Image 1 (spheres, one colour):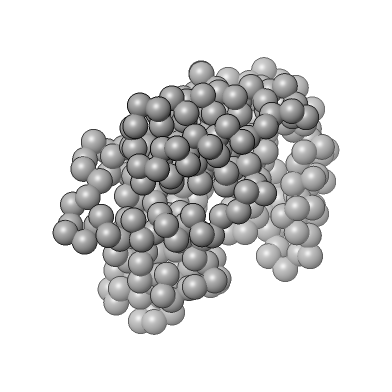
Image 2 (cartoon, rainbow, N blue to C red):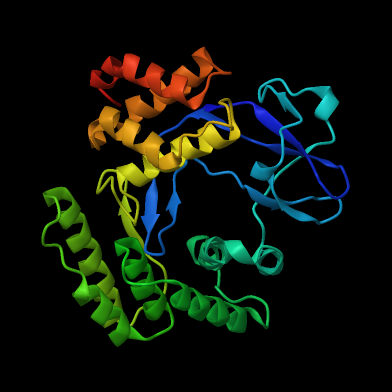
Amino acid sequence: MQPGPNNIYKCPHCGHFLKERTLLSGNTCEAMFYSDGKRIAPMLPEFPDLTKCKKCNHIFWLSIFKIVGQEDCWNPDSKWADAECAEFLNIKDLFRALEMYPKKEKDIRIWILWTFNDRIRNGKEIFIDPDDKDLWEQNSNALLKLFDDSNLERKFLKAELYRNLGEFEKCIDIIESINVSGMKEDDAQWVKSLKGQMKNMAEQKDRLVFITSEWGEDRRGGFYSLDKVTEYIIYERLKKRTVNRESTRSIGHIKSDIDMITNSDTKKISCFLNLTGWCLNMNPNGSIEEFIEDLIKHKWILDLKCV
């Protein structure tokens, strides 16, 4: 993992400065994948986009505002001494965000689910405050209404939500309806493994989130294939850091170019991520098109042995 510069943003409400940490490169070594779809990777930490000002408590998305400054993470600039690191929202603030950003309901409700489950991941009780259980049930039922069955990942998450709510038969019905015919062999193996784990937990009437895989067991893990991980990393880097935000290329176009380079090869992922950081450093002000060209030009690096 290689940290990048800290981006500085200004609160649109009071003008207080916030600091966003970034990465130049990272990998999913030692990552853990969970049944609710969350991935925790020590070498690829995630940083919040939706956050709040610590001075006035205003909630806002960093990515829709311009970066007003930068500082070296190893040599902080005294100019930004008062800037505080942006942090993830807590449960109460996430419910506030639901009212402010109704068009982002699905994303915010998934974060609410993950934040409740983080308590279990950290060895705590899931319900702490008196109204926590009602809020959790409200959020889980709302998520079920937002998801259809057209997406494999969402089918798994619907099954997970039913299991969490104690509706084990509905969970098992969804799991058994997932068909692996027509899938690539590695995809089918991953789906079968996850189906088996989730059905087993439902049959045991276990409602809590659980680890589906760890690095070294199944690098695909959770609900994230390497394509999804790659897309997320590239999207975050292109959106927030060094390339031209005005490019007309969509993330779909970018992903198709990336697929040509990585070919979904698990063994090449670490080299690819390091190469990504290298290309951004070599041409920090380049467009998305130039970034892709640099990746293609230097794709021979992907043939090196990965660690």
